[in-house]
Length: 265
Image (tube, rainbow, N blue to C red):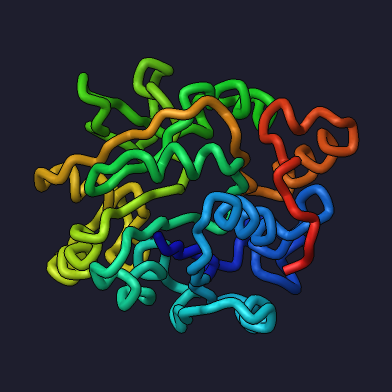
């Protein structure tokens, strides 16, 4: 399996920490987010890792990592960044796709790798526990996600009106089997550039909207359910909260970072 980490965006909600660096290089528990991801992936044998860069991308490239560049990072979103690495979706290997602003334990990657379906994504059943320490209004900050009886996602990525619309929370960690991978750029190329996708134009399409498009055209997306074991670092307040919990010895109750090698990038 190879991995693609989508790290092109500026991460304005993480300002001021991203004024001089991309969001994946802000530090959680004394190490860049990217270092935690690299450790988790390598811990389970994923060693071919490519980072899609954009904002302050030279700082990632300087680490000696394989990169692809999104030259339009300032006006595009996750799906367009993934298409900048379309050559890696060539069908020669399974592909793990990860957002750059998440951290996860190796067990989460193992669960995803064991799925075996054409496309799978991890979802957190115990999401409310984490959201409840991040915000006073969890429902307002969460997204919908509903499943069918087989564990496939029916609908995701919308603003919920009740907790019943959230059976789990999408995490930003996806696995695409080798035989399906080449179809993703083809499907993307056929999307109507004049259409709106959950209110966004094609260049700014959310990854959840792209997954919903796959679902709506008949491609099952299997949910791999986990309970905790990850963190979303979406804002400066998230980062400060997690660093405070780490200093107090309580972060491990949400995501156990003892797997980390403590090595630099």
